[in-house]
Length: 288
Image (cartoon, rainbow, N blue to C red; front, side, top):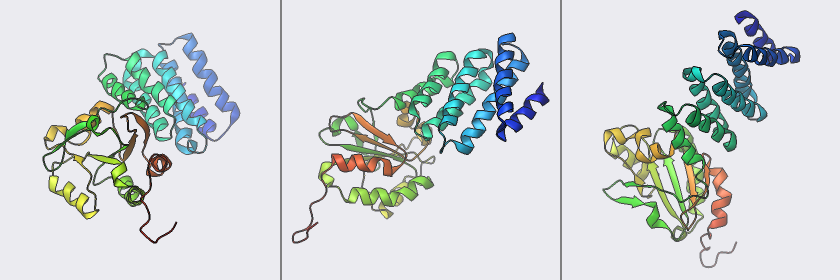
């Protein structure tokens, strides 16, 4: 059966419709015959591989493959609950892929499956945190922590005008590449009408390196920075609470303190910020 499934997988990936159908039919019939058999489990895994590889190759242009990857990952977890060591990583991979491509509803279903199907596994706590973040739109933001220079910032005390929260590290190339666009955007906005707070998630405790990065790029944001070693990087309490896994992240918060947008791309938040904000007035004598 192993060699048959592998052969069908390769032909299915080449686009052979008959072998695509055969993959699905084998997985369905083996599951119905004996859901605890090794053959049924392997057929389910091969079917997931088919969807996962197509999601990697075509997901950006054809989101249906990401949706199918998510569906099959959830189906595998529910059909083979005894296989949690395999099911949980598959669900995380599907959920992260869907989130990255903006399929939030599918991502939520994957992480909710981890939480609901495997509540005793340590992964359930992590999935719950991610769900807290994915469901954050429309909810009040809970964010606070010590800042560089010995201060403290609490988002609840910053209501009254919109807030932009930037999650970053000095080494994250996507953030470094997006920084000029972010600076350009913020330069067009009256600083008196927008609060900006950043959360640094560097792994080491080199405070001077983080401070140097901010100063060299002309960034004067209040920056949440943890000096305690076990609270650095992804162990930062804010990152743990919201299940943050990648940077950059940009969160736009309304003047009432509710999250209205989240994105990993500064260009996606640009229209909303411009809508919320009043641009800087042109200098005297200068016309638009």
